[in-house]
Length: 118
Image 1 (cartoon, rainbow, N blue to C red):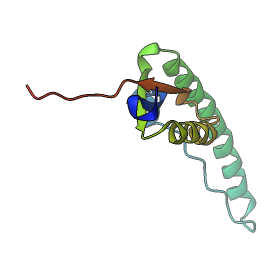
Image 2: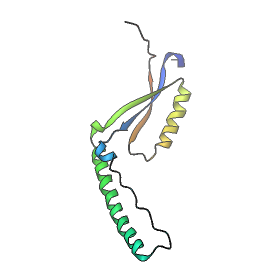
Image 3: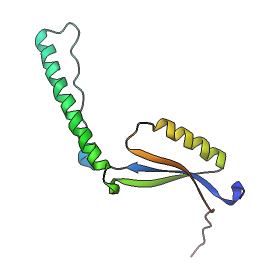
Image 4: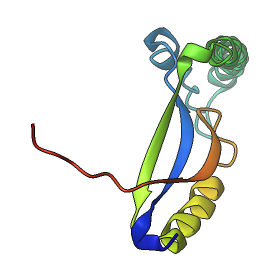
């Protein structure tokens, strides 16, 4: 089939974790100035330990949410040509490498849509 006989797209899955997970992302404490007194440095060390634990808990909650198939939706972006779709697929895979909220990037085709008034 020629490019004008089919539509080319990139399809992937994107996760939508529960709001309870996405709104409670831990925020790192701000380090004290290098010349801060020992008490501030000790407080920062304690805050850093608490932050690291919060990150572990948050990661576990996110992993649990992403294990639910209902958290994932399929999305497709349509392109004007096979070349454009292939180029975008490679770029999307590259920029989403390591992104736990996206997966399964693939090239897809479909017959062109023909809209009919009713």
